View 1 (cartoon, rainbow, N blue to C red):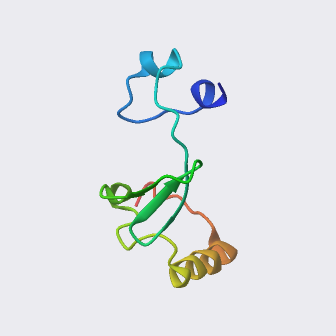
View 2: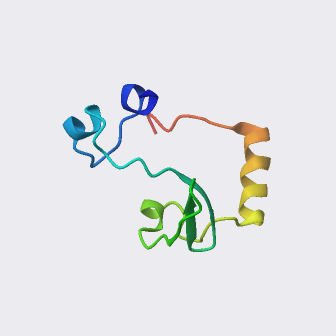
Length: 81
């Protein structure tokens, strides 16, 4: 219910989603090219996270770099040049 009330899913039929008729698979983790859901079902993420995880999941070096940057400056807007 929370998901239907507060989260917008791109490319999802909103009527089906609002009625609670969408699949309820929850992705819980990933490593390399593999993802798994909250029931332990594993799959290859051939979609590659829409360009944002094309290096795979669970890359400690990348996670460390993200954490270090977040400590320095977590966000700054890119508006107006």
